[in-house]
Image (cartoon, rainbow, N blue to C red; front, side):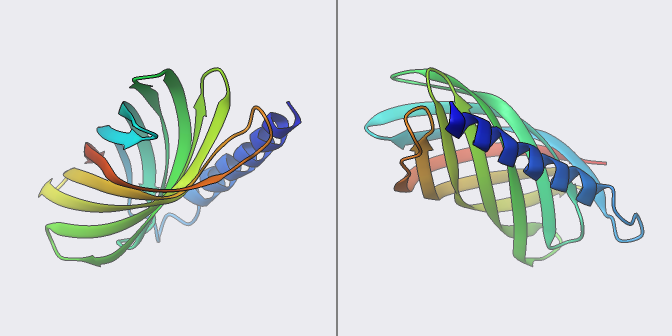
Length: 168
């Protein structure tokens, strides 16, 4: 239970930092976003489907932050998801964006798991306010918090997601 309390404390600090950063100087601000995605992935010989709703803030054309919630169901269990991400865009033109996302997710079911890692992504601007994106792969750490934090390094090639974002 101590691990869960410490993790909860760190999560609240992360959320506070993201909220304070998002209400910064409006002269440098670009846009708010809201969207969702569906992801199919495999891990530990199980297949999972993940549905998420997310919202965020783009500081400029290179940096963005966001929060998400959702549900993951698979061959062995289902879990509630609460997480955040940061996005860096190293290259883009008017239509295509190559992104690198840093993600941190809490998965809550019988035990609490923490996933942190990097997810590569492609975004396509299909209209001035609409984007479609595809995530693929995951490199990071996964660990269960119920019995002490025991992180396991994970590289997942079969992790494919498709999402839609509205910018306002």
